[in-house]
Amino acid sequence: MSDPVIIAGGGPAGLMLAHELGLWGVDSIVLERLDSRSGRSVGQAVNTTAVELLDQRGLLEGLHEHTTPVQGTHFSLLWLDMTPLEGRHQPALLLAQEYLEAELERQALKRGADVRYGHALAGYAQDESGVSVTVREGERTYELRGSYLVGADGENSLVRELAGIPFPGSGPASCGLVADVEIDFQDLPEIHRGARFCPVGGLYSSVPVSPGVTRVITAEFDTALPGPSLEPTGAELRGSVERLNETPFPDVPVRWIRRYGGPSRVAETYQDERVFLVGDAAHTFYPLAGLRMNLVLQDAVNLGWKLAADVLGWAPADLLDTYTAERRPQGLRAAGATDTQLALIHPVEKVAPVRALVTELLKFPDANRYLLELSTGLDVSYAPEGAAAPVGRRLPHVALATGAGASGVASMLHSGRGVFLDMTGGEGAADPVAAWADRVERVVAEPVAEIGASAVLVRPDGHVAWAGEPGDASLRPVLEQWFGTVRG
Image (tube, rainbow, N blue to C red):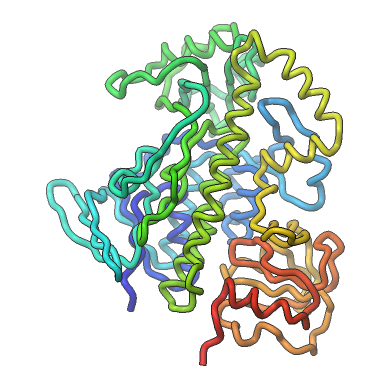
């Protein structure tokens, strides 16, 4: 038995990674410094790509009662035409982060993860064969031995600090408040319902959390975060809302409130030998249109199968190096996209004509589609230079007609394995991936126009690694690149 993967941090990144490892039968230990899940998180929605990532693992089923479809998406609160995604991709969902975390924990435990609340990483030392981790639980400390250590411990990551990985920042200073207040969403004055760009310069949003409870989020700029000793109050929240919406907010009980903010930051690397960073430990930026949660989940899904491959002994020599190579550029791109959106919000005296111009540009289909894919994460591609679509991209979430009946792109990825999708309908043809059967599943389906290829090799994270005809000689080197050489 190999040593487990040790994950510092029990938020969405850490729990999703534990779930991914569990799909491969790889043990993980999740260390969460809090005694229990707090339920006090900024996250209130998941965008199209995040929804599809959850769906491709069968994780949406346990979340349906907590979700509401979002009818649109935006770029800097300029609403985009969703027509290009209709019939090809799923809509975004309102989904409070506490429900997502609870479901991810339930599924990770089901697959064998060891989740330890009240256990905090205190230090580590790594060598050629693994990582020795010091854990603090209350007044006692103990040691763990792991094959790898993953820092999923947020923007103030101790793992990142101990690894000495720089975390430079950029973009405007901001100070935000998020709170759950005891008032029914429909009882709020109309100006305080929903998401809006505030003409005075800032952002405001509110969504229903449960009957009688509404989540309120504000963001003001050129305002530094106060020190941690200054606790936020309900009066501070009401003052911020009134400045942004220019209308008093009802004086209602506040269940909890916290501050967030600061500049965009991206770690200079996501790996230090046997230590990796995922989620907010690797990047942090203002949460707009669900892009931040999108990146968190994509990191975990990208890294999970690669770590499992190494632990199980079939990983190609440089597979783990592709994690930083693929994911850090996406962190930089998302941070830049967020900073651009904030630049369209503040300073208010300069942005009005720019927002008017961008609104005009969005009438052009290509401009609308570009920003639509950027803000939903659907533009992420790992294609090598010169490769043609769909290589590098995620497949559209469309229906498939297989010998077993109706299916879909999402369901064929539930096991977390790679998939060779043969759309020639050739049930009796030779299986070109049979030698990789422990890592890649073959699915035979009728042709699908939206995919645009006769056959595709799909990585466990849902990105296409190869496209062509089932008998093409170009398939084998790609299989070996991502799934290793054949055993025996």
